[in-house]
Length: 244
Ligand SMILES: Cc1cc2nc3c(=O)[nH]c(=O)nc-3n(C[C@H](O)[C@H](O)[C@H](O)COP(=O)(O)OP(=O)(O)OC[C@H]3O[C@@H](n4cnc5c(N)ncnc54)[C@H](O)[C@@H]3O)c2cc1C
Image (tube, rainbow, N blue to C red):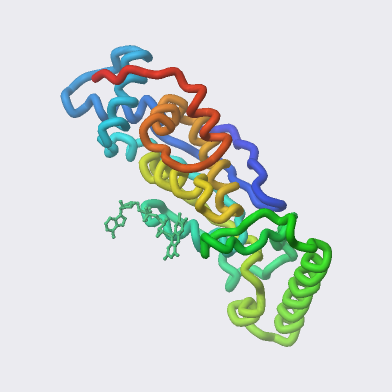
């Protein structure tokens, strides 16, 4: 891939940019057909093969399609993200570079869900203004202390300890389509934290644009989550017969 793709904005200052990809739907088909020395049998048959593979959990052919993303996300999102082990990661070093004023400032403060201990509810019960003011003041104070410590000669690797986890980090994420499907299934789902859900949805869109046949088959057979946009896409899919 030669032309540089535009980053897709996520949250207030984050982004996801597809840097490169390999294989695509055809790479999956070719990998599956090599098992029996076959070649492509045309678009319709290939599409059905992808559907068949996902329906019957024959997932290794999807490992031959690979994506490389450049991501900017708050540290607390990256921490959840990095739990996905089937991927390669390289991240900016705040030992090497000085931190800039690059923090996630949420638009709305959500309330604590009383039933789901990991979840949040809507923001309507909270008085937003004092929360925004309190938070902005705290972030500013943290950054000011960080800068002062650097000025006083403290090493970047130590001064960063004063910084909050809404600081944006950047990383490269290389992931195969099998692992990407797992990421989307878990992180675009309504049970994931809202912030990482936004990245899950951005990944779903990149996946759909790059591998439309696999994405459609994933919606039919791999998606069990809660997400209004994805549910609508799934409902709009025509039923498809699987074949080999
Ligand atoms: C809503 C939500 C809440 C969560 N809450 C918590 C939490 O409270 N605490 C917490 O620690 N984590 C939590 N997690 C993280 C979660 O446990 C996983 O670590 C994360 O989602 C990565 O998923 P994964 O292991 O499927 O992905 P990957 O690491 O990419 O693994 C992909 C797949 O490979 C296989 N695999 C990988 N490693 C092994 C292995 N060692 N042995 C066998 N099979 C393997 C599994 O099939 C796995 O699904 C949460 C995740 C979500 C989505």
